[in-house]
Length: 399
Image (tube, rainbow, N blue to C red; front, side, top):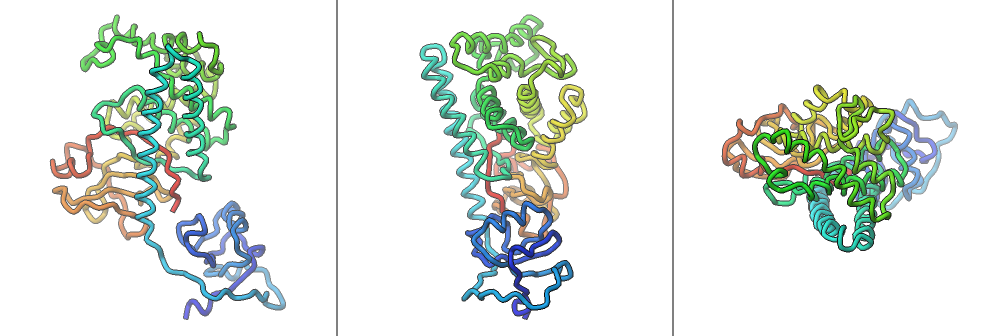
């Protein structure tokens, strides 16, 4: 009966406030469901760009313009309005993100291996890697972050570089920076820690506290990286600035030059923030705690605007966060969604049994609270791989 009462209107009559149904199969439009609540003008423009001349009005009929005669539009033979299980598509998109991440890390490792012996070859391959990253970022208007990893217990310089690049690029995208800026950010992020390869492994991988001498040596890595890359004459100045100044903070407390905000390029400030968050993440192992430390204790080091953008991107439950759901299941957040309390998760019961990928946005279940690793059973830790290193990559699944 409800279907028979649907009202058709031309796409030209759509206004904000209406709830409409699209006369399309779910594979032919970018929305979560065929039923769409029009809350932004961009939604209307997206529908106008689809291959449809009309939509069905579900709610908000009082907002429609009054016309003397109904607009007659040819009825389609059949309209498919059923709900769709998007979980297989979400799983596939996360697999693609994981594969892309691993390939990017491997490509970056190859580039690092050539930077001294074949700088021109290294530059060409780095430029190709950057274009891949840019293409993945711009595959959709609203890219999300997904949890990825290399399978290794320690995060390498190259893996860290890719994850920082992804975070910094998505910040730049959110701020509508130019593609040139995004490319500089990507290239600078990839190479920002290359100078650490000139720091002895005994210092780089030391588990305990560093001595003052060791700390000062480690703090030279931006200079080492800058010198290594600048001598080739191939890399753009904005990228080299990122390599040299990615540890500078706007309050002057960074290194190597103690620069203040006015002297730090905006693109470098973005990478500095992404790198700072990633460093805190490696220290505290929990994405939400790392974000909280950044927000509370490092707020003077970065601009309020940039921190706000990062918080918006990560959400209150960033990928990798371990949570308890309202049905008392334990879960690890795998991918952010528009609804921050209903992310896509890998779930199990408290003992680690009944593992499943869940699409909370399709369930009457949401995140109840964040939990710490020491609150988990050994079974849950194993099932969720809760203590694995956390990295990020783009995911363009928007349903």
